[in-house]
Image 1 (cartoon, rainbow, N blue to C red):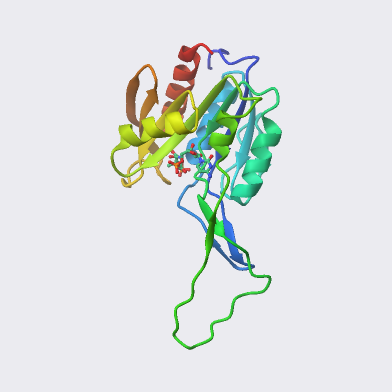
Image 2 (image 1 turned 30 degrees about the horizontal axis):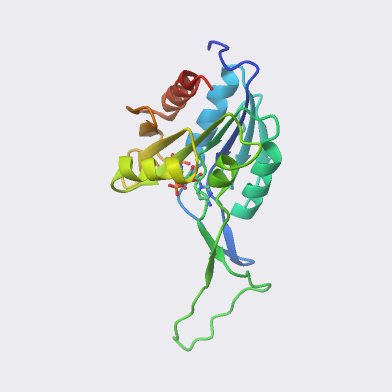
Length: 220
Ligand code: PMT
């Protein structure tokens, strides 16, 4: 049984990867399983929050009581997130959103021409969901991002904190196989203007509760 300390709060959480179509059978994506975002949604719901979970393509069951919106691409996740922020108290961007997408997706499967020549895919930048919400006129009182880093974790997290106008960034090292992408556990650094707080390694459930505790400590 959890304390109902998020009762009356409305949270929007993004989770999982996005898939960016190249043609009807191929896409660009990444290794996010959705576990971290789903653990956050479950923990927040258990603590009494109303939770909307915007999920990229993942193979996970919806936590009890959570309102789930399924999307595929970064553009769809962007739209779903912006459509959900009215009345939202806390936004948490856990999703590994593709930074780029093919400039156009072919209508038909791209065929191999057998010439051995190089093929090029032109990429264009996707909208930044976290930054858009951080700077939005209807910005939720609390906006939390993640940072998937392989080096200079604290410095890059602090950069993202400013650039995306977030209240805190949860940084994790995605070059390790025992934490981060796909793993059952995570080890994070909570970076806000006030302080940097390390937590873990611990189960993603425990990390989720740590993050929710830190959000409550912000007192927004
Ligand atoms: O899903 P799991 O397998 O459990 O793995 C969890 C995780 C490693 C994916 C998670 O802990 C994590 O680090 N998520 C953030 C992944 C990421 O895309 O990080 P980033 O440093 O590229 O992005 C920074 C922040 O901006 C993130 O909050 C991201 O959601 C957001 N973003 C990024 C690009 C974009 N176009 N829109 C965004 O909102």
